[in-house]
Image (cartoon, rainbow, N blue to C red; front, side, top):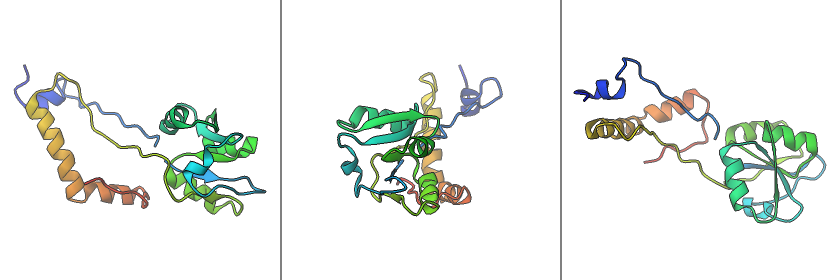
Length: 162
């Protein structure tokens, strides 16, 4: 049984981590006719929304849309452009950049979903290790480390949870 948090987290001497790099908002309209004012306006019959296949927003929209159609591809914006779709769903920052270069496309201000980030570990970790991870995340959020890291990554339109 591990005797220290370090031994518990990295029993082989190597700490292994992973991160989900895919994350939300809708860019609306076509180059000739931009449409829709809120995220809820999008769920109508005949509306087709481009998404990155298997992304969090693909899964969310597939479960929640009642009328609009999800069109999957390697990138929601690419599908939006290639197929002349009505909307594209994706991460706010890339969508904002795309919309800034497209005069006939607009970004819906409200979000259609929220991806809450989390830290996970195996169930076999000792309570002290889980407590250490919880305290570390709280400290990194509280001391500004997370906010600074987001700014360094040019992610300005995000909020660090309390």
